[in-house]
Image (cartoon, rainbow, N blue to C red; front, side, top):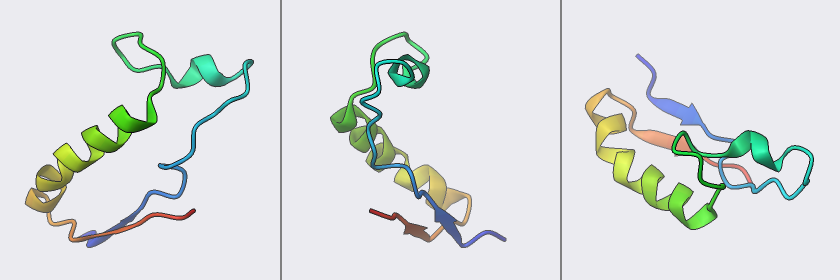
Length: 59
């Protein structure tokens, strides 16, 4: 069972104009760091339901 997940690049925003478009959301909107954080926090209970009890986030 996976008890921890590494989300090393989860907090970085790509500002390179050539690659930024690669990180759009499935609905087509541009990456938004606040939306990313809100969606991650909203999904925490789902992660826990699958047994993940810790996250490693690198800065």
